[in-house]
Length: 324
Image (cartoon, rainbow, N blue to C red; front, side):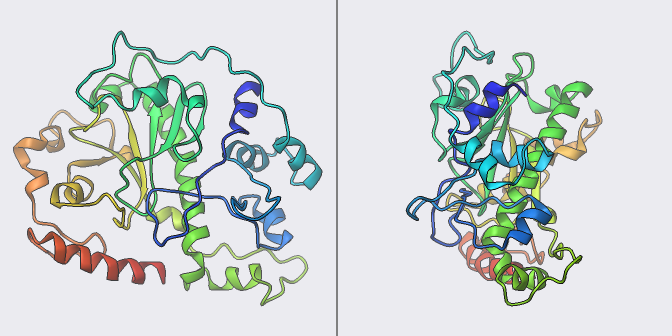
């Protein structure tokens, strides 16, 4: 990645701060309350305070620099990165269609074409090939979208775009990066409730001292709670991949079709591509996935078409899931 994109990304704080729980659809940076052992052992915490005076913010770009070894965790280096003067944006090599559809389904184009024009409440990070954003209508506590910027593939249906093995490989690689960021945010938001993270949290809070030579416990594998895929019949024109937590506690989950679009064959995991010619998910209308009975993602209980009862049940399951 060019130095331009590293410096440009420094102007974009990673995720906006909202403190309501579960506050779906946003990922934030907060003031680090973790001991330096966490910083030195994992190099993966995403922290900064949006409210504390003089708070230092770390954006996604800086995190990638640190994790890849391109930058030290030394505070002087971090401060230098954060205070670097942003260069004037150059003309981006972005996808530019002849026209943007006027039917309301072309809304992702503005992020693909000019991500630098959008604030941290929407754009998480971008490079010459991809833009990662927070979903405007989140269906889970954390719901992001990955937008490929390839002029060849962006207007294609995902089933067709992912027939290109080289393109599919690049998408999978970028999806994994975003999944890791989502998993880290899940830990930041919900790790304090988790039994599997208890030992780790005790050390981070200073209740237990980490012995010399010992490593911070890995704790819960939050990646298992992140899913990535596409809809068999996308609601937007431009190719996009959903990377989201599994909880279905988003503020925009409002009816059965919303729920079933992520919990039936209507949602196709990125790892399932390329699809075979006879894959039944190629014909979502024929199999009426969106009209199926609603089943809890966690326990499998069938709520038929009673969405309100499902919502009440999901709230209970969400609390239990956090405690795992």
